Length: 148
Image (tube, rainbow, N blue to C red):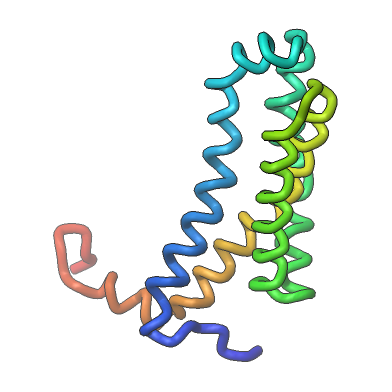
């Protein structure tokens, strides 16, 4: 297996990029709850529609998370991560432009697909960027939790 670790100078960029990507996906799972009343009012959504707006995203994310990791292993983590970010961004634009509850639900489901591509690969990229030898160095300092 090739050494996928990032050069030390690029590690902070890798850290910021991957953490922002996965944070965006996780925050999006809950932030929509703040807008539910406005969505109901502006789109004429029913309570059932609003449940699908929330759950359409979470369902596709949860169902496809392992597939996203497998695709990263087979096609390249960085490539699948980038595809996930682009898909997530385009679906976010579609959410903003949605004029009916159905369009919003479909766009949220596509956001979930994008998140399922980016989340597992962000973690894999981060893990590869900081090889065990580099990450273990920070944990080797003696402290109260260190074994005797």
